[in-house]
Every structure is written in C-alpha cells, then in structure tokens.
Amino acid sequence: QVQLVESGGGSVQAGGSLRLSCVASEYRRSNCMAWFRRAPGKAREGVAAMSTSGGATYYADSVQGRFTISQDNAERTVYLLMNSLKPEDTAMYYCAASFGCNSVSWSRLISYNSWGQGTQVTVSS
Image (cartoon, rainbow, N blue to C red):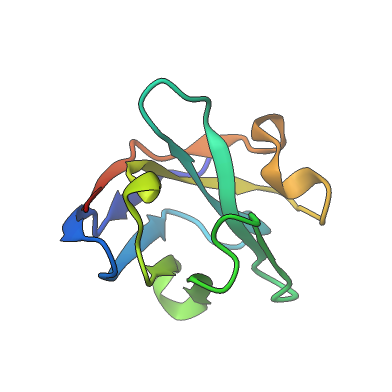
C-alpha cells in the first residue's frame, strides 16, 4: 500500500488560491492519483484525478476551470492548484492512489486503495 502525505491546506478568502501537495512513498505502483474532499455533513467526493503514466486528467464539474491537477514524477508528488476559491470549496481534502483510472472510475471511492490523512481548506466569504 502506498503511503500518502498531504500538505498545503489553510484558510483563505474567497477568490484566493491554494496549492495542495501529496507526496507518495512509491510512485511506480500508483498509476492514478486523485484528490477528494469532504465538506461538513456531506459525503466524500472526487475533485480531480490524473493518470501518472499517460497524463490524462479528470475534474468534477464544480471545479473545472478553477482547479488544476499536476505531477512531478521525480518528486513523487501530485499537486492541486486551486484558484478562484469559493466558500463551498471548504472541506477536508484527501489524496488517493489507485492502479488506474478512467473517465468513469476516477471519482469512485472504491477505485482507490491508498488514502492520505487529509489537509483542511477553509474559504471565507
């Protein structure tokens, strides 16, 4: 199982930006890296994912055009750049890894076998 450590969360005002980082203990076995979030009182939902080998990316409609997922293979790190943040983006953000993902499976929790502990993002209006 891959160990994942997130960082970069914090508190910002609406319209601001944050960049989350997720460092993986092993990258060769992680063919898909994703970010999920869970807002208070809501279920965990997929935010973005990318294939570490092919570079394909997937985004939730709610963040499309505002968030960007990227990777640094040499550093075994996946990033989530979040721009134009809104109060509804407030949530605990989790990094996840799986052996692969596609346009259907990427947002399903069951697709992932490794999870980080999460990093809190709070956006104030």
